[in-house]
Length: 52
Image 1 (tube, rainbow, N blue to C red):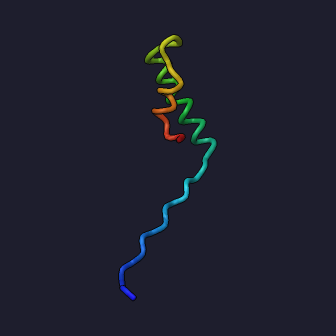
Image 2 (cartoon, rainbow, N blue to C red):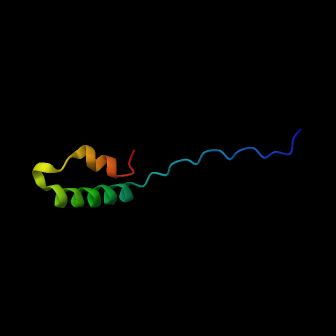
């Protein structure tokens, strides 16, 4: 046997609905302030959040 440590298993993602909601609302508010109702895009808001 070798003395090499095995790599650590990947960390599981923790779901936090309140954090996710707050982040989406914050990003969306900034996006609508920047681009207005006609210019804001859901795909850009989704890209700017960490909710993948």
